[in-house]
Image (tube, rainbow, N blue to C red):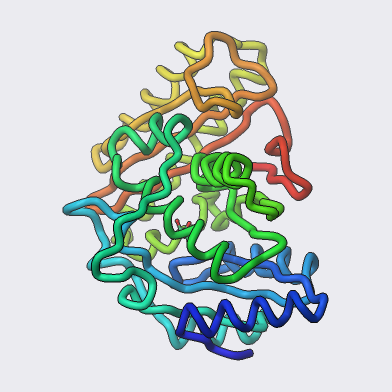
Length: 293
Ligand code: PAF
């Protein structure tokens, strides 16, 4: 495995590989890799000749007062994990090489990004779409793999890819969970043991909502109240939102159907956690490898 730090070196490598007829899969990450990232890497491995993992904690997707400075990082361990999982290239640029000091172009999705996380984190998705567009141009992938835990991010990137004609297949891979159901996230490492114990309520709330839907409830309001009630039982959880939205537009639904996504964001102390479920189907629509969230 090679570690490349310079965007121009990465791009030359990618263009050369393409000229030789080799396909490239990209797994974009912010490092602090765990089993969920490695599952993305395995999917990427099946899909292309060359697997590139990018590790870049992108400053532009964090708002003022968010956890950019405390974002967990463990580059040595990440490199070792990538090597063991069969990555070919670890792309690890610095912020200075990714962003010119006078950079002035932002890629912004203006519909799907405005609801759910976009309401409390208005800087987040423009930062994500800008850096992912840059990674697409630098790494020149045929395929890029994202996790279903970040369902809104996956939808926003699908939309950006479509609207900007990137010739890239977006794969949305299953959420990987801890034994008690908590969705794996680099931010889980920031939880204290009592906070970690409370965090399992997120998945429990989503599963008990699914049980009501499986029992025939189709009205989103009682489902929303049920989830809120479950989460509110914990004094440690501060609810950001419980969204019951359609997968296509990420707008609130009037009736729950097979394309309904239930997405939740909470804060536990200083840590923000998200999770979601599509309660009436086994897989996310619209990609060749989909999740059973
Ligand atoms: O999901 C993430 O880790 C980040 O948002 C991404 C896609 C790597 C962009 O910085």
